Length: 347
Image 1 (cartoon, rainbow, N blue to C red):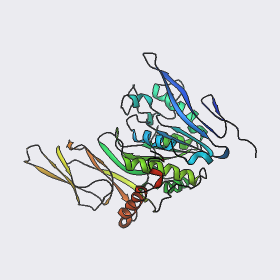
Image 2: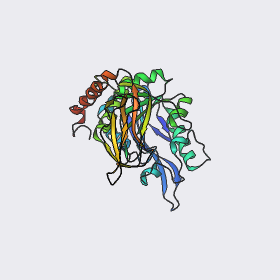
Image 3: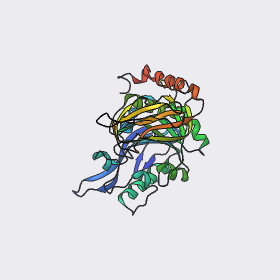
Image 4: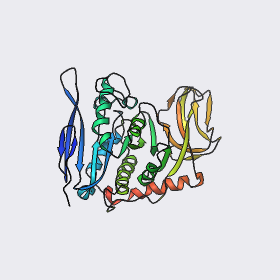
């Protein structure tokens, strides 16, 4: 069997059967501190696909960083076929400042594909596209809700990416949503370059959530197994089919005041169900917030202080609504006792 060629990234060469963290220069801060984008590359001894896993494109979405950390401690990679690139922190600037954005207030996920001589956001996007995305066959991008909001674990895929839907099912998140692509987003520009992306959304900005972390780690390993990159030893394959959703909308506060929520993520609701009550601080007026459509709550606001028009409950229209809660419970319960999450194994 012929030996594979080294994997090249950022001017570094990683021999087959080895792993290495590489630091790719991004910029220099005003105090002369250099900033890099660091990637951990595991280059398998045998041929196979190239997969990237990225997190913290929005610097305050830290659950993805924890998922990446746990993933890299997995024992599944000794027989890796292909190449895995893990970038735990894409937006170093935002991560250090606990901010979604870059110092110039630009959203990195609206700055792709970027350019070598553009703004800071554009340069960072260009570096990630050319050094990471362009070298891979598939990507998994890890996100969470913004601060003061939470998302139930879910995968978002392009409606046109039929093959990627199979990997979305293999991931085993409770919900798979076919969502449109936004201009300047990593998903849209990567797809133009021939690289489809699974976008994982779970948890809350600046917070860790154990279930979100477990679903994320297990999901990535499941996709790697589906790609033929790793054996299924110790990888709990999804026992249920994720709930499919094709459309979603937010229910907004009918008035300003204090929210008492009656529903939470993962619950099915019918049109007209009371989601919560918004009351003024004196208790003189109370307004019910009701669901305008049936569906599954996939996200919600955590802040009880609301203004009129604030987005409070994110409801998705799902297929097989009568089975949705059962499937979600099955997928979540499956990971509770999984051996791969024993402390000695991965955490």
